[in-house]
Image (tube, rainbow, N blue to C red; front, side, top):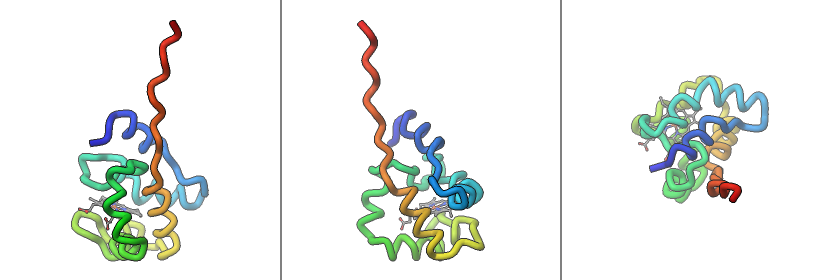
Length: 105
Ligand code: HEC
């Protein structure tokens, strides 16, 4: 399970590209920053690693056509395959949580 810092990092993350970021916030963020949704958490490597082994084409297919509780196109009816590929790349890129800063002695 992701820790609270990992969840905060997921909530804060946005694609660098403005247009992609808008799509992401409209369509994907509601589920993919919430472990309770059972969606793989944005940036959480442990959630994505087993899925990435399927290969990008299968991930795209699942995102486009839907897969279990993942709705077709994640509610982004106007997303192109290219949009979905870029969103998947963003969401599955690990966000590394730095170790807690040492208290000044
Ligand atoms: C209504 C909630 C919801 C929304 C909105 C949503 N997802 Fe998902 N997504 C899920 C859930 C739940 C899963 C896990 C499905 C499973 O494996 O049981 C998932 C899984 C995935 C997977 C992994 C599929 C696999 O083969 O393992 C990808 C990729 C994905 N989502 C991309 C997206 C993208 C891109 C968007 C936005 C365009 C999005 N999702 C929006 C709920 C959502």
